[in-house]
Length: 194
Image (cartoon, rainbow, N blue to C red):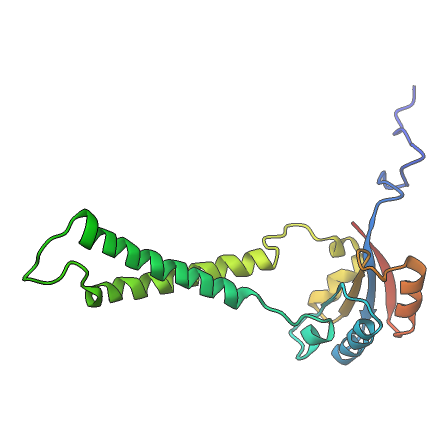
């Protein structure tokens, strides 16, 4: 009996599935301007599910790939409202209903004394919800991402710029999308395995 590994027709030379699903197509560019121009053209061509990667923030790149909505402010507002309402309600419940104490003839529902705690819990809940909301909406923490399966992507944190068209995009067609990306004159195009 041989000690060599068993090969199946479903597996390639690296013992991974041959027909593994494709995450998308990645195009590499040499400059930030080339990436922004390619992102504008890709979005204008009807591709909606795209992403761009660069070693530094690029003004206008988010808008170029169609990223217009940011839900973090709404999450912060909701968190702040929950904090403020819960702080005020707790103080009212304790001071006026559960344990009413007459202090110098002051009314049980003395709202000016409730303001400081209400303000502090509003800020606390808003701050916590902003951090948690930002992480959740960004899909973090993300210990694995398919783009790291492409060896050239290691340069994304140094000096290269990448545009990815997801295979989940309704307009995605392997041959058609590759042809479209070739028309943008990238340095290279690679399939991104899942």
